[in-house]
Image (cartoon, rainbow, N blue to C red; front, side):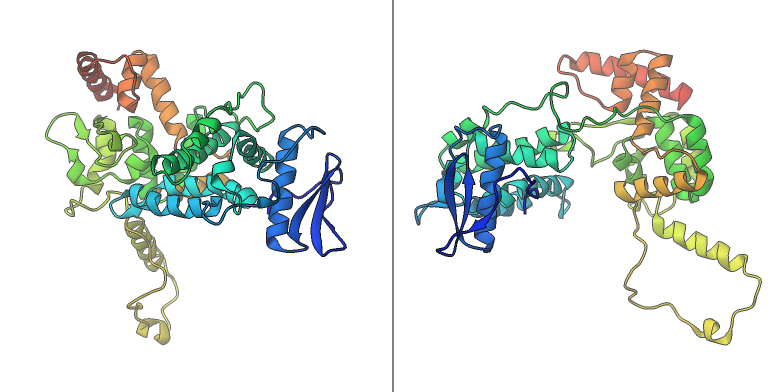
Length: 399
């Protein structure tokens, strides 16, 4: 629970009364029954706030000893109510979106330090203590800022429903975001292009379906989630340059439309996968596994034993290949192929940078913005239509 105390941290001690106690800035703070979960949590909470204040001797805790009225909402109660509502909001096609995982990860830091504290007393100092815990956990500064925003969002939600005082959220907004040039948080290297030689070296170690996935993404600049979800029903092949209009994409919840133009080189890769089942993803791990097993059977040199010949496939196996790759399974497969090929690991998202660089070198930034589906606050509808026609022309020539 929380960061493990260092040798310089005030010690968690047992008082002669059986209470746990810690001396911070020259004052004793009683934490509850010694060696209880509640006293340990209070100890870590006080240490986190003390560290966040710069270990000042003038520091005084908020919500000392965790005392609260019987009718006041605690942090853990607020978290449970918020998660119950968020699980209904962040759904797509009956399944939770990835945002729910991020919300739970962010709120974990609040729960570890302040689960029994009063929600109305949670302020900027407490939020700063949670942020310090995130930094100590090795999270990147951008991830820390995003997690802090999600924590604020929970308190805003509580204020909107009058579960807590609306002023709590106003206080949390005063905590400034981390600046990558002046923070001790980890600053990750920027995502860059991956050399084509590395991609080409990786391709032989991927199954045909994933090999096609990589090639199509490299040519079109699709997002990983868009290429693994490619379906025949969302693909218009009536024009020379095909159009892919995914129903699910990054800005779909904002009512934005996404049109991906597919040129002749990518069309050639896709044609063998335009099967009759219109609603099935074009690239299927189930089909890849079936094809791999077929090749193994054809390459078999020794005859089957009688017991193998009598063996029948289980009616309900515990684990079966899915009908669609996920972004994570796609990324993991590429990482394994990189290791086998002996090249530095790269991620599918880097292929978008490759496409953007190539398109911008061929045309200009306007082309790349439209092809990749990036938004600009100054773009008008007329401008978008004009750039769409330019993007169509570019992708017909290079895609």
